Length: 388
Image 1 (cartoon, rainbow, N blue to C red):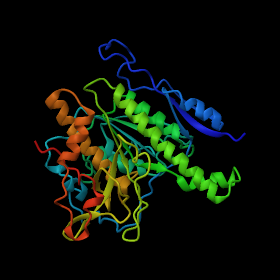
Image 2: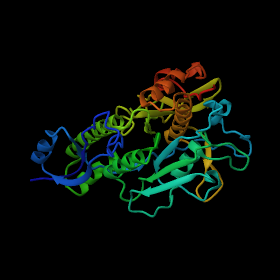
Image 3: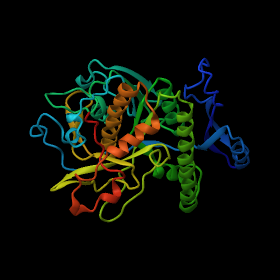
Image 4: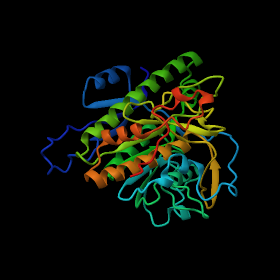
């Protein structure tokens, strides 16, 4: 009997809201995350247990930056165009008191952009802790980096504590990502930024090369695994939100993906961004009369952020320009951190639903170039920082 590898999550029973003395109440923790070889009959049996959710293990990969014209570092000025576009440079808020998490390829902790930040690192891959790729360092720089070489690169540049989960590299998997989200939530993250996606072609290739399936059934099996992973992250994130103590909210932001090639074709957001309760971020580029959707940015997004020719921290020092929905995601996550700070200072608590509502309600479409007809691909619009 054929067996496949599944990740199984056991959801804890929610404690009574009045039981604030319980160590488990509000932690957001799952009881167990395990991996098992299961037959179809095993899968059907587990699915009948309402406390468990499961999905086939799939490989994960960073959403690779795409080729665009690199920004001229010397000519950019003192503030990156992305910081100005989301109006972070006009906001009195800077992320103070907010804990952010970046789940990516790691971070160059010695980079000057992160000086003075209390950074906790957990590695969920089989690689070294170092950011070998540089992708995570770039994303972290946009979210909370200090000024580098006289240039402002970070949206929320007074973040005092950041959680860096290395989830991309050798051994990256569904289990590792779930464990990283769970770790970040338990460590008190208010904003979780993820610029990653499922390696769908890699999973199809595995079914063909390792299990001997023909391309058509291999693709069909991959599609089913893909669907189940979307459902898993929907159920998991919903459970996390329900377990948090009232007033200690968290928001999840993920890149929509770079598979579209406008004007030839458009591709919908993939997981985890495709899951309910995860904000899907699309990428914008500068155009002649405003901003337009980047040619590679996937559709079915919730919000949009600057994602083309974005200057940020370069692993092992300096600055570098990159493009992708990966670059848009930390802009959205950074603005979420500013709105979370405003909530915390105004209401002395953070409400997840209200935080997402504020993000969407304050987003705008007016800066979009009307000649590009991009309105249907930006969700609520380009995120904007709170101004008062």
